[in-house]
Image (cartoon, rainbow, N blue to C red; front, side):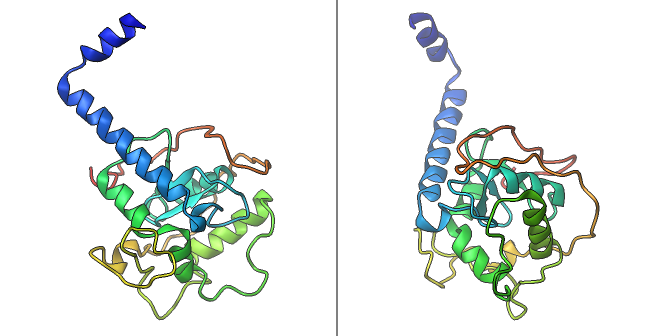
Amino acid sequence: RALLFARVCSLPPILMAEDRAQKALVKRLNLCLKRPENLVCADCPMRLPRWASVNLGIFVCTNCSGIHRSLGVHISFVRSTQLDRWSEVQVVKLERMGNYRANLFWEANLPRAAKPMSSDLPVVEKFIRKKYERKEFADRNAPGPVPGDGNGDGASSVAQTLAPAQFVVPAAVAHTAPAATANEGLFDMLNVAAPSAGGGFRPFGA
């Protein structure tokens, strides 16, 4: 323990400051995950999601995170809330949006019983591609989801500094992608792999 403490103390001040900043950002993400609207995956009934789509501003489970990665980063840039490094801008996006606000836009025209009632992978993948690739259920009268003030105002509709257009996802070209790894557990408690950001993509705030 003494040796470990000595090594930590020997780190350059700038690295120690960055480490403290990352811990603070992860703490804020964990607070977002505890909000009622984020206790369930944005796209399926799986509880306790631990992954996030930065540009969509939503939290998703392990199953859905794999499907989101297959959509491409131009549609959904997936990060682990526990394993990846985060920037202030990225965390603010999640604080300002969340599953409730995002789904007000993405599921505005959702037919009754169209949302998956289980986490069956083929069913969920089909739903996610309809929802984000083809925008079949999106609000056609709005440019995009409306962000809030970042204080967990899931039922509020007041937009602040981030414009709704920043959460609009560009049209995507349909493509065939490998299926995600299934995880049929009741609770999505584990992070099984760090997501890939894809070649040439620059994360928000980079």
